[in-house]
Each structure stands twice: as structure tokens, then as C-alpha cells.
Image (cartoon, rainbow, N blue to C red; front, top):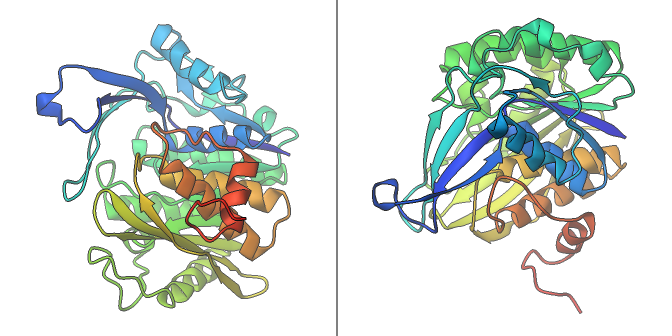
Length: 341
């Protein structure tokens, strides 16, 4: 099975430990980005995963490419050009203090990409799955057109398409997101959302839910998933359910809806004590894609995806560096992570 993901790979700059920006005198750097994070997860599961983007030909661009190569991601389709690698500054939250993310990604190589940069017919030859997120078309430039061209080519090659809605208010308005994603979601087979994205992008929400109070009405998400599937023809809809008790402690679970069978499956819930939240949703996406491609049932698929993401919350950096065996052991347990004897 071969998977292609497409998006921006950024340089991540972060104070050490839990320092604030204003007190830090040095920053750690690493790389990450929604679709790149998914590719790393899949490569770590032994899948043939390729990442497509545009990066400068200079040393920082090469360092970004190398960060993927070390985990076995195919980088041969990455286009080289442009002058900037996008940057994001991340200040980790703790307890009652939330995280802070500041973007410095204007005029990055991928934002200035043109449709002619990508030969999608060649890229999708022999490919089984294509994944992108709502972050990529939000970057501006010609990226909505590029994403549309990718989806059209993927469909022509019989490739399944997944999309994580991933609404980012710092990148575009709700109105812009709704117009672009309503168009792109016509091509999508598997939609990944959370308790906010469906409302922000499409105005669809669960009743009797206050995301900021940490209260979730699980039954309400059945309606959200079905509305999304009915509106766009999705084969499956996954909704992640995060209960935010503090910046350090969250409840984490998810639901997967299969439109053909009408089946709704909820995962067990994990009580997370968070080391690094960044990439949590991407690790869920990577786990879900792996589970669906390997023929797991609806219930098995959502358990695998949530367990994979629970593990990611314990790992520094964007990338989820876990194995299939580690995920399956957690998914088979009681959610505590204790060894079952």
C-alpha cells in the first residue's frame, strides 16, 4: 500500500522545557507539519509513505527533507525552489496556562508554489491513498487550485482521499474556509474533524455540548457525522473528542461513522497527561489511515487511531515515533498504559 500526503513542512522553534518566549534565551528547533506528520506515522508503521511539498534548495530546506528521510518517508516527489521555509514558534502550555503558537510562514516556498510545480499524474501512479488537511488550501496563493488539481488526479487514478478539516482562524476566515472546503470535500472519501471544525467550517454542531467546559454529548456527534456524510458523500467520518480539563490533562476519545452500514463506533477514553499536544490530531489521522488500509473493522480502526494519538501526546516534537505493536498493545488494554498480565 502506498500513501501520498501533501502540505507544508515547517521549522518549529520552541523554548526549552516550559519556558515562556519572554524568558527564553535559546530555542530548540525541529520540523513538522500536518501532512508530514501523517507520513512519518505511516512510515513508522511500515507503510510506503511519500510526502509532497515545495522547499528551498538551501541547507534549511535540506534539513527539513532529512527530518523525513530518517523515518523512511519517500521525499523523491518534493519540489525544490523558493527562498523560505515556513516557521512556527511554539510555547508549551502547562496546567491553567495555555500554549501559544505564532506563525512566520508568509512567502514560504509552498505558499508561492504554482500548479505547474506538481505532476500529479506521475505522483499518483501506483498510489492507494491521498491525504491532505484544511491547513494547506488556507495558506493562500494558488494552493486551493493546487489541492483541487491533486484531488481530481487522485480520483482519476482510483486513489482514496482523506482530509482533516483542521480549521485555523489565523490563516483564513470561516467564510473562506467554507467556500474552499465545500469544493474540495466533494472529492473526499474519509473526513476527519473535531468538535470545533465541523461548526467553524460548515456550521454543523452537536447539541448540548460546551467544548470550553470540557463537556461532550457523545450522542450529538452521531448527528454531526451523518450530516457531514450526507452533505458531501463521505464514506466515513471520524470525529475526535477532546475534553480539556487543563493544558496538561485532557480526556481523549473519538468516534468513527461508516455511512454504508450506518455503524457508529466510539473508542475508549484515555486520560492524557500531556507532554506535547502538537501533532496529536495528525497522529490520529495516520493511525486511522493505517487501520483502514489494513482492513480493520470500524471499531478496531477507531481504537487503533485513538491509541496511536494517545501515545503521541507523550512524545516531544511533531512526529509520532511509535510502532504498530506499541499501538496495538495500548488499544487492547484498559487505556491506562499499564501492562496487562
